[in-house]
Image (cartoon, rainbow, N blue to C red; front, side, top):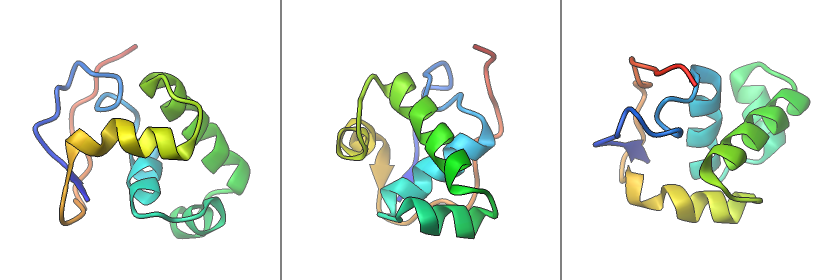
Length: 88
């Protein structure tokens, strides 16, 4: 998937790079263990990033998160993360 036409003032798009990468991996359907391996971080760090993303989206689980970001996604995953962030 690729996030496009992002409103840079939104919480999802202003997430830090690590949360963005975890969010993309979530959209790919990767398990926490696989995300941790792919990003060279611990599973605990993946869970922390997912928790932050869930709070920003106002959801409580992976399924709800995927539904919440679905309007922002389109076919073909982006390899380019957002280059602009807005402090919270």
